[in-house]
Amino acid sequence: MSDTEKFDAIIIGAGPAGSACAYTLAKEGKEVLVIERADSPGAKNVTGGRLYTYALEMVEEGLTQEAALERRVTHEQIMLLDGDRSINIDYHNPAFNEAGQVPHAYSILRARFDEWFASKAEETGAMVACGIKVDELLVKDGKIAGVIAGEDEMYADVVIAADGVNSLMGQKAGLIKDISAASAGIGVKETIELPAEIIQARFNLNNEEGAARMILGCTEGIHGGGFLYTNQDSISLGCVFMPEEVARHGQSVHQIFQNFKMHPSIYPLLEGGETVEYAAHLVSEDGFRGIPGKLYRDGFLMIGDAAGFVINTGSSIRGIDLAILSGIAAARAVIDSQDPVRVGPAYMQELNNIGLIPAMKAVEGYKDLLEIPRIYTSYPGLAADVFTRLFTVDGQVPRSLRKEIKGLLKQNQLSLWQLLKDGLRGYRSI
Image (cartoon, rainbow, N blue to C red; front, side, top):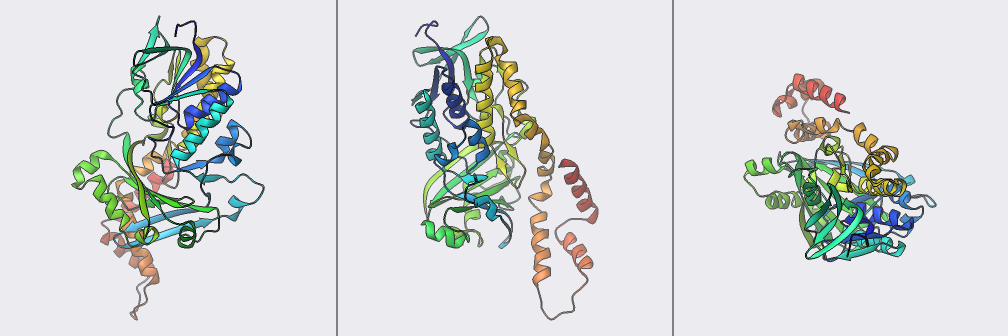
């Protein structure tokens, strides 16, 4: 096509960020092309995962009721593992499931959800082209003017990169470099099919209710953690590891993950299930500090994982809702900016207006908390030892709990001073 026959926007990637952007633009009558490398939207995505529904409602009120979702998350769980022992904290709030209200979160399967979301963008008027790899960005007079895919050149007023972590398009635009090993984790995930009634019995769920579990102590001392989400008739189970520490550990990611699956508190939840998906993916770990110094240049914006929009507080992981918000913000900037040169600054303002940047700033310190190495080595064992002490009755005269804890600190290679320092560091982090 010629540069006189161009789109208002070309979006690279049909994940939640790209589809939210396309939907919002097309609803306002913009000519939008979404280019997806996979054969179908979501086919290459690995996220656990969960969707906080407020973001979908910001795209359009009532959209949650139509979406390809799994179970309403009404059980928020945190699990600590040490050896064969485990501690599981289960926060159950029936209000998350009240009739007439939009539940605060659902588990989702990305292949189903992304395909549905992209189809909604198409219904609104966007064009979605799958199985196409974008090779280069078109640059004219210092401005990004379109994309090159194979022998085809396609032009647009703005190109929006929604191509995920370690964005190739962001690199070609000169906004980011290759992601460093210290900035990203390796996420592995299995989807394990089980009948709905078995899932409900094992997790104490009613019909349509679901559980989301964050797991610490499952990475054999490596910086990282695990997650488990219940779907309608499957379980999503995964771990995230820091790659440099895995290299020094001596076991492969796959072997550590298999050890995790066989833990006495995990395997009974999966027993009898069939693994229907196994995949791995890079996961941004830097939070607010991982956002590139600049998210735009003339004719070009970065959204979603490409822009580093991920929050990990240890008790929850947010990425999909932030991706959707960034897609909305980019679309609003394109719609409201009469001068294409102003789209970038307008996008940054919209990210603040929609609450994305403030939300990431608010939890910036959690990265410092999660970098305390003893969280992955000593503290799960200390917690398990304390619970063992609390629930053990052996006929012996018990020592005072204060003296017992001093002994347990030493047993886990901790000192009271180290505990106080880590506690202070954690307090300052949050």
